[in-house]
Image (tube, rainbow, N blue to C red; front, side):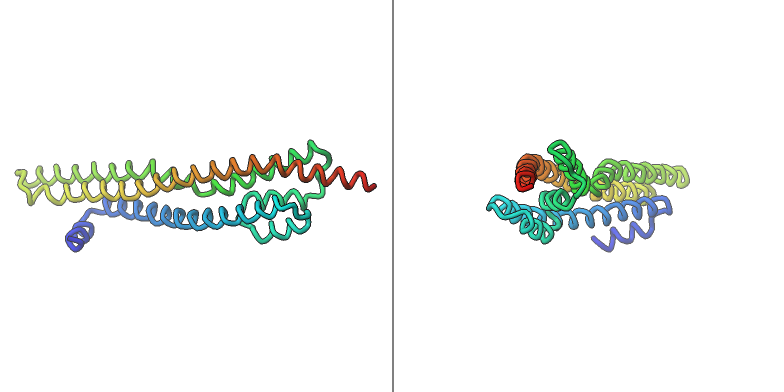
Length: 215
């Protein structure tokens, strides 16, 4: 059966082959993003739990920064490190702005490449549909040339149509599923960042007040 499918692809016209190559590129890149994001988010979740455990244990700021440097995939750890190392922050309002700014940066990092999955999920079915229409047109051209509608005449065009339809769906379905899954993951991690932001502002505000008292 695989040999039959392969032979049909090899016998397909140039346009259908270009459609299949395009869908293959979309599919390969999508799977690369899915696997990369899965690995990244899995590690990021573990590092976030580890950093929050240290943060809530009451360790000092410099020690937490060392832990944050080791947890470089965790968005909350990256926010902490960025705020800790930012020497231009002044006052509680400046602290809140800095936390919001670094939180937005981390959110953008989490969402990186997800747009390609969304594009793949919404575009590849239509690319496959184009190949489908082209295959049907080839089938009708075969009927016109042969003057009959026998199976031998219409089969190649119908086969091209079905293959491109299947290829479009094969590229789109994993991309849509991956996009929805990772989007929910990003939303969960964004909520964690929002919750952590208030604790972080209170932590650094208390630290700045203590420094002011010492002066």
